[in-house]
Length: 355
Image 1 (cartoon, rainbow, N blue to C red):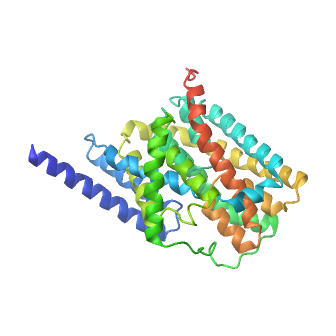
Image 2: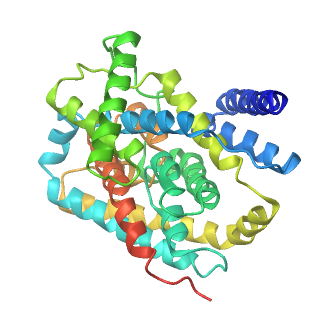
Image 3: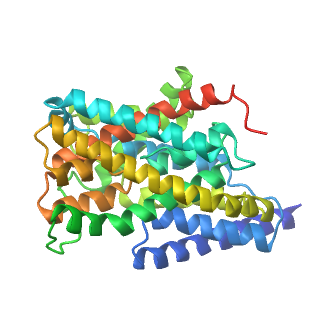
């Protein structure tokens, strides 16, 4: 019995170490969300090479979800709300339009055999890839398919966005690589803030019976603390966020099977066409945003790009775009997508997948 326990510990340590190594390599290559991708790769290799059941324990996944929730919640601040306030109606319409386009894209993805309504919708929700992937499994979606297709979209955006911004909107970059880091209260305060929001949010989430309480509860508590000034600028520590994404990636990767990979492979051609159509539709909404607000075409394009938040802010900062407005729209959409995902899942679970 003791020998089996030690073998499981060794097995988990090897997989986690492999995920960390993969994350470091992917980070060097400039891949978005390298920790999450690294976890997926390591878990996938373990699942295919040694197809014995292995799960990430709940005492590890719950804190990881809480850290992701705090990370997302801390993006909201008074400056972000002020940037949206003057143009709230057009921004809200664009966000809701993006949600409807995402649902339509998910419905089209269901034309591929083996994809459920919830999986199709979650795979195509535009924005909040990390949060959507993190909650997909608990809400009844195939989190393997969701992870692959969510990050297919993010990779396409990261690859094409600088080119489109430069050639289509005349953006010029200074090569600084992104936003300069802002001063905060320090790592100890960040860690305390994350732990407090995580614990309080989890308790409240369960009391209020929120779906995925480990993620949504801390997210709402962190957002409230940021808006009221109680956070004093604290955010989730970068190392904690990376570890959380690594855990979520491992959880996804370890559940892959050869059959699930074949299903994903069959879906990729159709998914690629749908994702490109989704990106084009969001760019069209950016054009509409310029017609009804004083936002420049570049600002509107970056604000409505469906994902790749870090890359979007890097381009906005380097090109002289209104980074505050871009962040405000992106964060507003992210919150709407993450908060609406449980409602979408509940609604779609009542529908039947195509035969």
